[in-house]
Amino acid sequence: MPDFDYQLVVIGSGPGGYIAAIRAAQLGLKVAIVEKDKTLGGTCLNVGCIPSKALLASTEHLHFARERFAAHGIIAKDLQVDLGAMMKRKSEVVGKLTSGVAYLMKKNKIEVVRGFGKPLDAGTVEVTDENGAKKTLKTQNILLATGSAPIELPFLKFDGKRVISSDQGIALEKVPKSLLVIGAGAIGLELGSVWRRLGAEVTVIEFLPRIAAVGFDAEISKILQRSLEKLGVKFELGTKIESAKVTDKGVELSGSNASGAVTYKADLVLVAVGRKPFAAGLDLEKIGVKMTERGRIATDAHLRTSVPGIWAIGDVIDGPMLAHKAHEEGVAVAELMAGKPGEVNYRIIPGVVYTAPEAASVGLTEEEAKEKNIAVRVGKFSFTANGRAIANDTTEGFVKIIADAKTDRVLGAHIVASNASELIAETVLLMEFGGSAEDLARTVHAHPTMSEAVKEAALGVDGRMLSA
Ligand SMILES: Cc1cc2nc3c(=O)[nH]c(=O)nc-3n(C[C@H](O)[C@H](O)[C@H](O)COP(=O)(O)OP(=O)(O)OC[C@H]3O[C@@H](n4cnc5c(N)ncnc54)[C@H](O)[C@@H]3O)c2cc1C
Image (cartoon, rainbow, N blue to C red):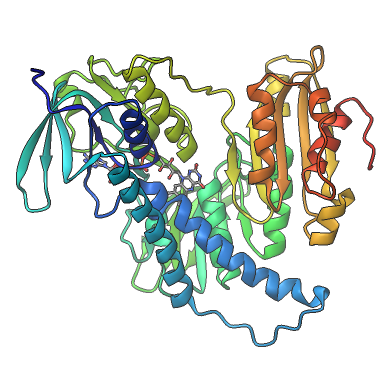
């Protein structure tokens, strides 16, 4: 008789944890998943990817109705916003997806254990429920998938009212007159867009000299900034915020940039300077689990921690804090536990900023190719010459394909487009198969589609675009 009740206990039900649980169950393992929050799905489904996209969709409709309907011959007078209804829809979207995860747990015979999970040793997880009652689960493997939490600035502590994180940024009950956003990464730009479209004066303050600086091509940053400025978002780049005054009436931030001291005042400040791994209360070092210098759980190439039988994935370990990265690690770790060759290709992980237009990137940027002394050829095609984009009224943006100058292998793709998050997928697949720009250029694309711009950019690598 084995001396364990489960072959796997997963701690955390985000896109890393719940996917790992499902894959492990598919492979015949007896699995339990422990979650401390009321609903399953983690940051992504509850307060991250999904609610932000629901609000982006609603406010994009509003913006399009206000700014573009007339050109389409649609007269929409007296447009009004019912913020309560918009938030209710967002909550319904979240509810549908989190209950979908609960259904998947049931379908795959995964036991859901409510409470705070803590590994006591490599074979035991202690779960404390909301009433303080404890129970222990005996298991062969433990998977830590505890995710991340917003980073707080030391002089600007979150109070949920004037100083907010994305958790509140997706749930404000009224539109602020003015909003400062610290951080021009995906979360800051997306939530900044939402509240700007709803009428707030939005200023995004960024320490780096450009927006979407991490993982995105410099040309993308430029065009994204231009389009957000058109929307009315203001940018203060190369600016460091060093102190803050918070009162009942608003916030005042002080700092400096190349022109000297600066101050900004607003009703609210959204701090979106990044997220930190969340392993609070787990006392991992006590049981021998090593952490990295940056406070993440250290893992090897097979997602094993320093303690045999304890594994870790997702935001709590190294790598980009993205749901699809956590998801793929969930699949890989379950397969590795079951003795199969699970693997994640970290070189080919797309990143997206879901503004309008969206920005999507995968692989090497042109600047990175230069830094690494890799000779490349670049093809670029603008949506102003794409038939579907003209018909759709979505001509803002371009596709840029970066190919190895010698082998023609595609090394990177960078897209700004209304649906860049979808368009990037074919280049991701192409790169996964080690395909060339020529392969992409010779692939038949339906006409008229936005995806023809991807093919044209691939033709452009060889200087033979047909539509520009
Ligand atoms: C506003 C916002 C927008 C985002 N948009 C996107 C996007 O568009 N695309 C994208 O790819 N990524 C996006 N992200 C990032 C994405 O949400 C994360 O990368 C992803 O959720 C990480 O998954 P995970 O499984 O590692 O952890 P999480 O989703 O954080 O899940 C961890 C879970 O573990 C639980 N937990 C933690 N400790 C314990 C414990 N001791 N016991 C029991 N349960 C515990 C937590 O309650 C949580 O449910 C966004 C994030 C935010 C905040």
